[in-house]
Image (cartoon, rainbow, N blue to C red):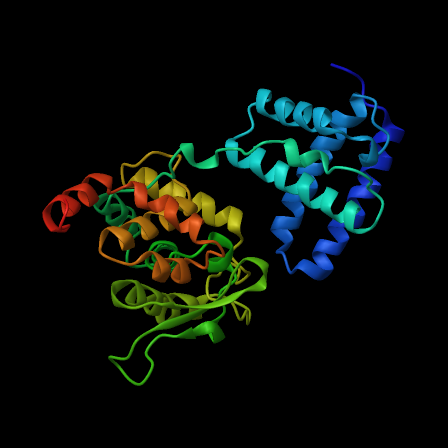
Length: 311
């Protein structure tokens, strides 16, 4: 492996930090997204410094291709490769807008990564219900975990959205006992959306709030709390989901986002239209939601043959 020149690496990272600072201040991206881009650019800068580049302005399309090939050979997932390419494209657009980059953007010939050839993992309805029923109904920890799983699957929330949900964001029975429930969710990029939340999922959340949560110390405004009354962090939430997945007889690889994937897929399978599901999940791009339409291709073909005038 080629030795990395420390001075080259420092200069590359300093240029990248200018773009990252502008992202944090202007683009409204979440801290997690900016941190992920920073990790990607540190990785790319290391490869470029080892190849002898002193500045991003020296990078051409061949160097971009080498960086992408390097992370692919290192075993990076398709999503990680695509995010790295997005980070590089954002950085070079910034340099172009600043008037520092002359000529062609080297990332424009980087090609398109086909992210979704590997379909998103989903649980079957029975599997999802087994997971939701795995934690005990009694005890503060069981009630909290049942509420967390209900938010991830019943509300389709990202794990960071569930952990960041505040009591003030809940309107669980609008207009009375039988009224609809709503969650005010702060999603990616600080975008706010209203998520309908009722039925058994709402019952589990109310059970936690009324019986489990009051026993936690402190005065946190957040809905989901740890034993000491502090915010439930996303890493702990991942471990909770994996723990109950094993108890439910599911693979230990089950993670919170699989519950969100499953929620989307089951909504579409139940007749939800694509645009409504897009709004429900907070997807900025409809193409992201379209990933979930793969699951019921056979059912779609059967419906086409039965109901379409030219089926």
